[in-house]
Length: 341
Figure 1: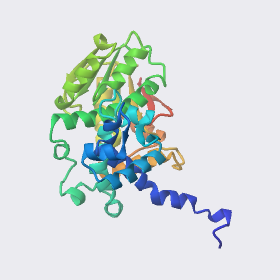
Figure 2: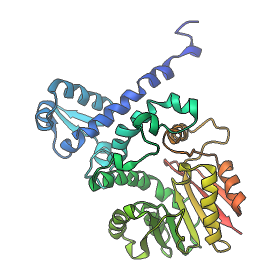
Figure 3: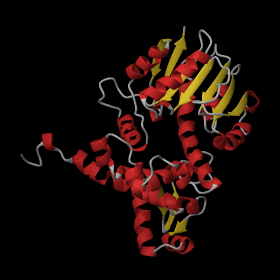
């Protein structure tokens, strides 16, 4: 065996050895406020170090690493944000992902450090990592601003995926969509923009309602969307001929998924539909990598998992849906449409 044998190319191993380092460079730069400080105002590393109270030499090394990752660029001695950093890594952007990045840095980073325990025991790692019995988000987000930033991070994911999800199938025959656990309303907004005759509602827990009302109210389809507070496991579901579940089913065990799906189909009229937005694992389980990584993430964080289309179809047909179709969107989330007879 020799290192120059093409069958023994170490590139994939070397890439994975440093993969977490690349993530942490971005996490740290976001956490330290570097992209915010550079937005619209190029700065030298010395100026930034003084402004952010950081070690000048250490900061210069982090900035150079961010240049290598194409998150920053350099103009002479000044560092500047790249377009992707301005779009996703600055808090004041209309589509920031900083909330989810900071959550990844302070929670997921530590949970993933205990992956071996999850594999041995088949359960989430909140207890091992933080001493809690469940993912108690209030321990991370101590202020309304922090909660807002996290929700806006999830909103950033939604803005990437939701327009493709609602266009994956012809939903033009439906008249009222209720997005269960709809968070900031990104899917309802995308659906109403795509289908001019559709009305919608965002149904989520009371804590999510203020931001949802703000974002929906600022959208061009605000007059066709209402925001309703409620718990989809406990409260009566608002009337609809189309429900949506975006990144919801992957949080829960099959038993809880079936319970929720049963509530939905019991509420739907004949011919009504359910739009599910989740990343689909390939049927041969060889990919895609994004789905596999999210599946392991769900093991660490929840009682749920990512599933194949056939696994979703089996659950949906079990509760009474007659027609199930899937669509790969090319976005972080795929789509499944189920129709009640």
